[in-house]
Length: 106
Image (cartoon, rainbow, N blue to C red):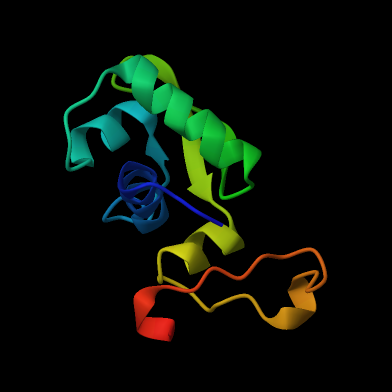
C-alpha cells in the first residue's frame, strides 16, 4: 500500500497517541504534524486513511470546551508506521495483495 510522506506523518502522530496514552483529536494532529496545511486538507487526508482502514474514528469527547472526534490507528495502521507487530501472512489475502519493493529490497 502506497502512502505519501504527509499521510505517514499524520498516521504516525495518530498512532503515537498522547503522552498519557489517550487518543488524539484533529486539532492535536494539526499541532503535531511536520508540515503546514489547512484543517480541510488534514480532514481529506484522514478520510483517505479511514477508507484504507489504517485509522478509525473512536467516538467523541469533550476537550477544550468543545466535542471532539477521537482518532485511533488500527492494527494495520500501527504496523505500517513501525510501532507494532507487522501483520502476518495469515491476516493478509496473499492472492490479492501487491507487494511493493523499495530499492533496499532489490
